[in-house]
Length: 373
Image (cartoon, rainbow, N blue to C red; front, side):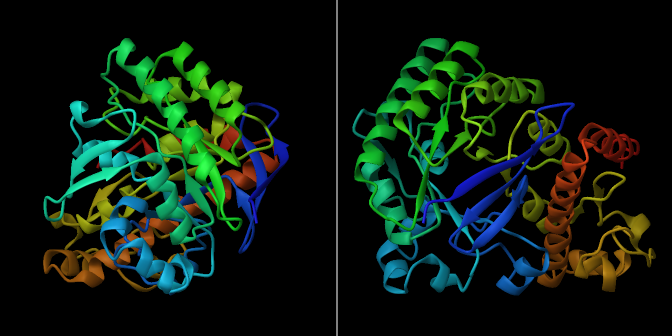
């Protein structure tokens, strides 16, 4: 089935929206933060952990699964859900971000993109049609249109040509899309140019998709202000009855700023990446658990957090695990960091329903930014 978005309430003081997303695996409240499971796994976690933190949609990566194990193997397993044993909604990105990080400008043509595998250097060629074919076989609930991800530093002329090519690719991808269980999202590009964002959004909507993403803000962005501008320049031209997805963003402050501007869905590898390096979110800001001051700290990472890590383990123990390079430490911090962001989304939804989003945002960020650790 196609996902169905229902707008239930907009905060009377801003553009923050509360709604529901109906999927093949149930109906979920939005806004949400979505964990990233690049290679059909959220790093260091199993599916029980993912469910325990109250996750809804999780992401997997088309490019990585194309190379390993291959979309045909996933398809033979019965699709991505059965392959990874997850009975919740899955979104697959198009592979565009990874491809363009590996490709050179001269290797991007109207037909597609030539690049070398990051695994063995094999020459590869990915087209809009191929990206959709892979995602159809992966059988995710939401597939993403194949787009070009130009750097924020691109010139206006390059960005304009890129936007126009992405639109042509979006149409080509939609034309071959043929999985009735999947929904297809279009992606708005245009860098930080107001007119290009408007043009990209309007033309993408004309093609017609089941949801819309704001892309190109997590590449090499120059500042948070530029990212917020890109959202502001895109949102007014997206339909109110479709979900809006901001790609690759996961800092707490950015979640609040995005939701305030009308974003419903966010994802990022940040919480698990930080965890693997010993960093944790807390309501009083990020901490580095490797710091010596935590050596004899027998309190939880965040005493107000309800995750398994904070309910059962101390900073001293987790610091020991991280210093000793035990994977349990990475797992526990990953559980905490993901639960931390998901709980922010839960509280955001509550605040929108009560028309108190801006109050919650101020309360949270005043405390989060107060202590520089």
